[in-house]
Length: 259
Image (cartoon, rainbow, N blue to C red; front, side):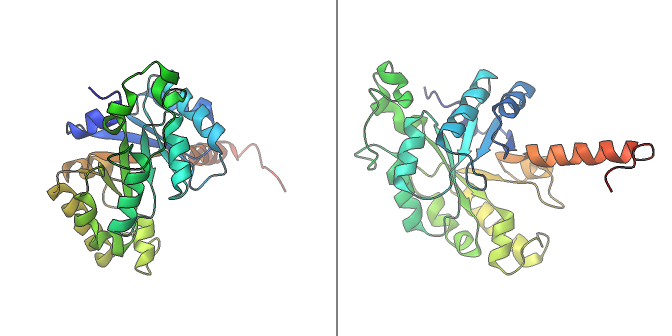
């Protein structure tokens, strides 16, 4: 049985709710895990956090009893190798437009003969520093790849990408997809929704896990009803901002603030 609880649960058809961490703060990661989120997603794409900070966040999630996923910053094969060797088994990969790109990413993440991932399992965290003697035989079962559909071109290629062995999940990035249609931030436009739904339908038809973020008119509950297996909406920085603004609004009458 796979050690990757996210993969095991998602492939079994469970609905998983997640939270984004943009701060790179291990305490926040641990708090979200303790709160009970199914996935704590650490964003290494849109933040300055490095590999060591990413691993510290992953360890904090695990200390809280939770399951981490990392959104990687690029398609660099060396970066995939470092993430996987660090024992990060669930990866989200942004901006995948074509089948060729998807195939290259999958190959970078799997050992031969399934791919071309380099070997260091006997000393790396992924193989429990050599204590998991069967890791090279089971690594493909432990690795969960969520490939992001973030353009209309990717939506049109979603059926072929979802059909690839090793593509466990297609995760729709609605904002960038809208941007590819010249409608960044306009997530309720009919052609944006049609592109999203094309990718969603193709993913579900292929029997793969479907993921996304909430958008106006489609909250997590509605998305779950539509077949989405992974929904990640809560965000640490947005929550801090909202809390700060609410506190200031409550107390401004007596505390006039900076001038």
